[in-house]
Image 1 (tube, helix red, strand yellow):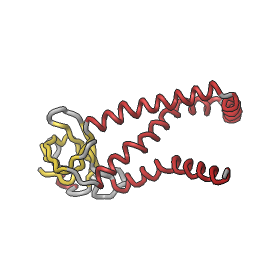
Image 2 (cartoon, helix red, strand yellow; image 1 turned 45 degrees about the vertical axis):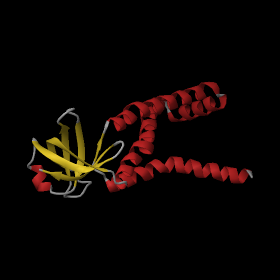
Image 3 (cartoon, one colour; image 1 turned 120 degrees about the horizontal axis):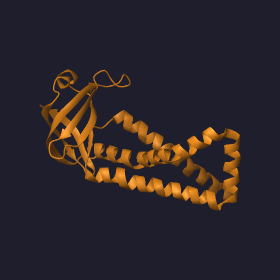
Image 4 (cartoon, helix red, strand yellow; image 1 turned 135 degrees about the vertical axis):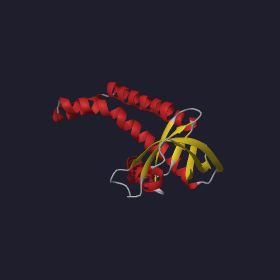
Length: 191
């Protein structure tokens, strides 16, 4: 019974460690053209930050109340040095935030990409066009749109009509796609 429980905890631990990596790799291979809405922005800017702060507080309380954890960390930090200790305390909240982001925000975009929603169309101002870095396909172009009502800027990577889109800077374009609960998936750009 205890061996089975140990294997179960090992499998759960491995899933929790590798699931964000799998989600992020899947996200990079799909690369959905996604424009977030207020719900997605609230989730990413408020909920994920609150979860990160809560996780850091839990780790800090665990550090303060458990003598075994304190001694283990003290030994680890004495072996590694003061510089590593400072970097660990500075970058742990950032790593926790990106962990929560890859477990929630990335799957939301992938879910919106795979589940057809209600048709959506809106006019945006194309304010910046640029070629993608060399990591992406040669036909990739990075587009930055400004919402005509809220003036929020959104950036996407687009893989069609690169030469035409590079000439459309500061022009109004119509984005056509599908609406989901947390944002919009772009299927077509009309100019």
